[in-house]
View 1 (cartoon, helix red, strand yellow):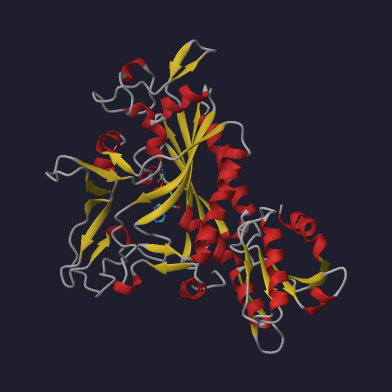
View 2 (cartoon, rainbow, N blue to C red):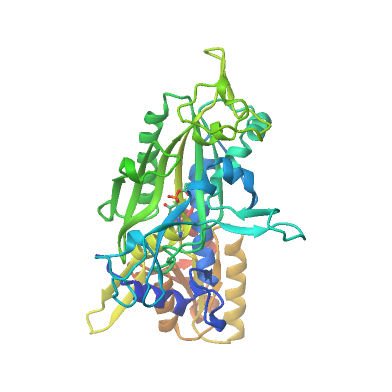
Length: 454
Ligand code: GAP
């Protein structure tokens, strides 16, 4: 099991400003969380690492940032209107509602009664009126996955970038699911973020690319600090596959509440592009696509070698950003025995993920000379582009070190009287993990930090 319990993690997140319950002052909104001052930095850093690996470091991927509000036809032809549901059951005694597949021994998790209704499908999409007339006919959905806009914009991206197979379209953004029982903190929520790549390949090459992406994604998670022994690759049984998938690997992680899905990597075949395509009969589709009398486009690409048009197959690595935040925090949480009966809590985040990269700490609170030097150092460090540099003015150096250990700040720079009196000026640099302190000339800080962070 994980070294940190979910309760400890929730408490750390609130205490230090990573995550707060949404609408806390009104008793909260179930399954909805807000990222606080440090959480927003950590989440942004994780998304930036994903974007860098999936878009910038590759020559075959383009980005997209599509709308959340979705035309209902998109989610009709994608199959979500008919099939995107979980089985729901009600307790006749306490009137609680639960996911039927989460019920153990037929007992209500709330009151223990076995008087439960037969499971029935509950569609997870949030429906919303669009426009000023709410007459039931002009509605759309909040997207339940970011992927669909990648499919519907496929032709526009291909036409504007002249891409050939294989190539991908990446997107990070919010998705919404009306989960029956949101639970385990930010693991299962109603509003969350996904980072999805739709990687389009020639039909027949899909299985090869499915394997390649599985390996690439495991490697990426290791680079974010996860340990391989805490991960598991789950092969989804045929009967549990999503309606669009031919095969799915789940990358699972040992969260505080157990081994569960962190990212899905699906072989979606030509199911989505096929279903959104006009005149499907012209193409050899793998799937049994339903008729689409409403689409105006053929979502296909030219296969020059074989002188034909094809609807590409799609491999989709889809990560939950919030689950990613939960996983890297779980992995990084460390308690160290200080040998004097006290404990040190350290969040050993990879440095590229740390919310604050460097804390500049004055030895003496409100001392004008020291503070002015701190401001000058901070301004100079900001120019390096290493991320957030924070200035502390608590005047309690021990307390500042403890706080920065607990939030994962890799380096603390202490500015003291020696800094301003000595020539050359020097500061103390303290390493989060080793607690080692070294004296570094202020003039050398840019090179020192560039080497350390970039
Ligand atoms: N486009 C494919 C897709 O959406 P999925 O397995 O339903 O596939 C992908 O979702 C990832 O999104 C999951 O592996 C998980 O990390 C995240 N995710 C899904 N539902 C979630 C929820 N209710 N709360 C938080 N994350 C969720």
